[in-house]
Amino acid sequence: MIKAYIQFIKSLREQKGISQQEIADKLGMARTSYLSIEKGKKELLLSEAQKLSDIFGISLKDMETGVVPDYEKYKEMIFAYLRIASSKKDGKIPKTKLAKLLYLADFAWFYNKMESMSGMRYKRIQYGPVPDLYFRVLHELEEDGKINIDRSKDGINLVSEGEGSKRRRLNKLTKEEKELIKKIAKKWRLKRTKEIVDFTHEQLPYRLCSTDEIIPYELIIQEDPAYVY
Image (cartoon, rainbow, N blue to C red; front, top):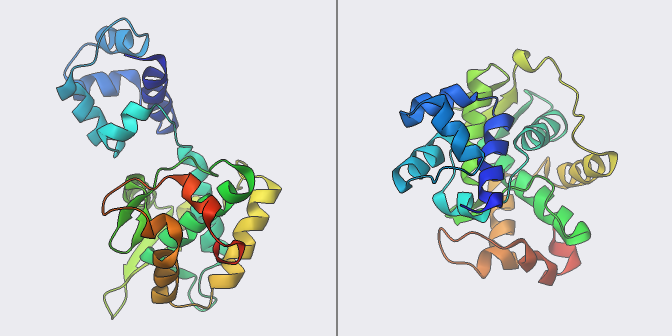
């Protein structure tokens, strides 16, 4: 097992606030055995790796890359958009639109800085680019009372900030990152979900990838500057 892979597992566990004992219990092994995995002294079986991927809500392929997404920073990006891009009437954003806003922030940041804002890996699905972890993150935030997800009369899932977030400070986002998010929010706040979905579908990263394929960030570099976000 390569060092990056071990670090990936450990970092995800720590970011999600899961103890070694909890992971060991889910894998059906003693804590000492799991500790040996994190130290690189014990090989992880394929069946155990599959269980870990289910626990973390990511694919085995993502685990194999050893690239660790910043889980907490991604949550802050969500809160940033809920505060500045939501409807002034009810403070809500359609779930699909929120996913696209997050994608635009990550890829626009890469366009300028050659690195992702959150480190998330986006997959090409029917309604646009989205990380597997997006749905897991929203579920966790809803379970913790930090966001609310309501269904409109039209059957659209709407996301809003919950009381449980207590207007948390967004310390992991830099001033420059927040400014980019504000620019993207300003452009798309009054636009319909279909408009932002169509926009991301027309971008090179989406058009050049196949269904369910992970979208390489590098593809955004080829995009016309006016169409990065």
